[in-house]
Image 1 (cartoon, rainbow, N blue to C red):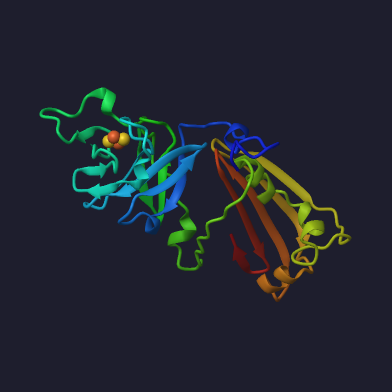
Image 2 (spheres, rainbow, N blue to C red):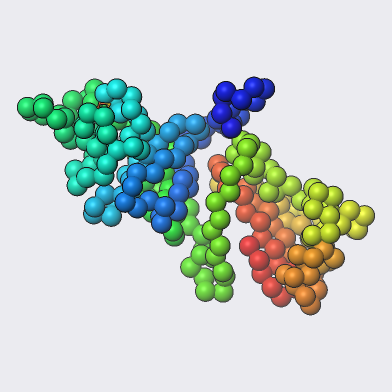
Length: 251
Ligand code: FES
């Protein structure tokens, strides 16, 4: 979504900013020999992988003439702006100005940077511009568990982060909107829901649902059985859906 589309509010305006947190912005494999453009709350950020393998992230605007840096070139010293050739290190400092005899690292030539970390195949950014992270990015224990299959799939959608998360955790819509795939409208049975709050997440546990009759539910658990189902919202941008149907676990 862009601010220029009539009648639409930019998504950046709909999601509250929680800057002191980690955000996934790319897969590690996405950041290779060319600069990569991403956005966080509508702020353009360029990522690149330095020759030593480290991933860096700075504002996608050259402080000289505002040219997008993702058109630039990766060099041993940093990212070189394509227009007049200034070079920026991963710390945001200007390392080189062509034709300037002397130090190039004046504060006015600095570009804001974000701390980047790679973990379990994802590139994470600490959301605070020029901030220092507190702790490490969240880890997903199932990714390193051989009993689980990990599938990573980028999803493009129009909506605020919170609208997308709310959709993923909204159980009642499945019976009607995806009727027959997992649940069916009309298959009604009272179940219990226990909601618990933790320091960094809230969890809803649904108790007492028998395996739904839908196609996907039959595929996940051909032998039937009882459903154990947890939905979790992890601050500030992650939803987690865990099903255990019969003896099979699915996350
Ligand atoms: Fe980037 Fe001039 S616009 S060096």
